[in-house]
Amino acid sequence: MEREDRSGEARANRFARARRVLEEGIRARAFPGCAFGVLAGGEVVAQEGLGGFTYEPDAPRVTAETVFDVASLTKVVATAAMAMLLHQRGTLRLETPVGELVPEFVEGRRADDPARRIRVRHLLAHSAGLPGYVEFFRTAASAAAALEALMRLPVEAEPGTRAEYSDPGFMLLGKALEAVTAEPLATWVKREIFEALGMRATGFCPAPEARQAIPPTEQDTWLRHRRIQGEVQDENAWLLGGAAGHAGLFSHVPDLLRFAGEILAAERLFERTTVELFAQRQMPEGSARALGWDTPSGESSAGCHFSAGSIGHLGYSGCSLWVDRAAGIAVALLTNRTWPDRKNPLIRKVRPVFHDAVREEI
Image 1 (cartoon, helix red, strand yellow):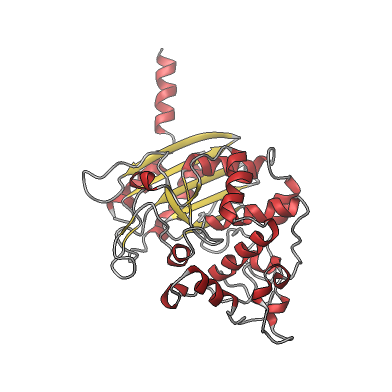
Image 2 (cartoon, rainbow, N blue to C red; image 1 turned 90 degrees about the vertical axis):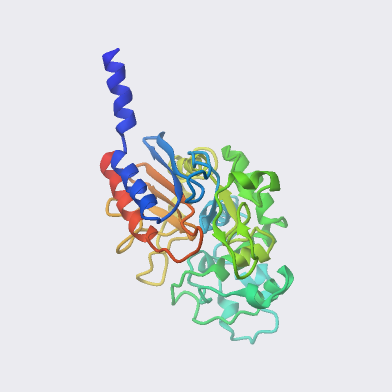
């Protein structure tokens, strides 16, 4: 009995330092609540929620299974994963000109326009020469108008020569993948990826009755003029109906660890050679971007202990997923750090300290 008690106490105390980092983040108002999970040795060794949906004392409490708006984790869990699977099946070539898949993107452009030289690989690697961010929602009154503006975007650099993280690039990639499958991205990834991996809580556009169980991301006082809860925070994704290649996905920690587990094991969906290909850093020289994925560099949000072969991504709402392929470890952290507004940058300090604490406690 004494041995069992000690074992239970040890489990309860595991990741105590990491938990304290998050609790301090809540007290400092880096975010009102969070959920985190750790996968190691093929097993989930931690799943927990801390804090509340908002800063009010009576706010609903976050649990390990609380669903969050995961923002740009969409880029890897949905869009890049879709590209991985299509490439593996032989229906997508990384060197295909984007203009062949989305003719509207090159129609009316000069023969020497660099847009004609953008390949699928460039969009995945954020090296297509497209701008990092465009506020389509400022001037477009509909999804059709936003897509038309996307198709007319000027290419600012020769493809492959400049690495710049680009939301428009992944918006365009989403449309290119939809052209390959002749099906909306949201429905394709739900069937082929999320359902295949048992990710039952993951998807786009949560049903109205499910929205109150999702932490709010923002008190919008300038565009939608309402509390943003259970609908995508990203304005461009919202204009596009809530589902796009760059944002719009909702998920929770258990599902993200299932996805990370498949990236590590490559047993059910992805082949190991596919994971290896998409995990490799791309041109131009010095870029930390792989194909869809990010890799640790400089003062990484992954902290000091994730190996150079690790892959991961961040989400603007305060989410992250890092996978150390060499160590067989994955860490998911979900927060709503943008509540009630986007002014607080403390998440940047919390993430690396949290990841260091997790790795040092394994």
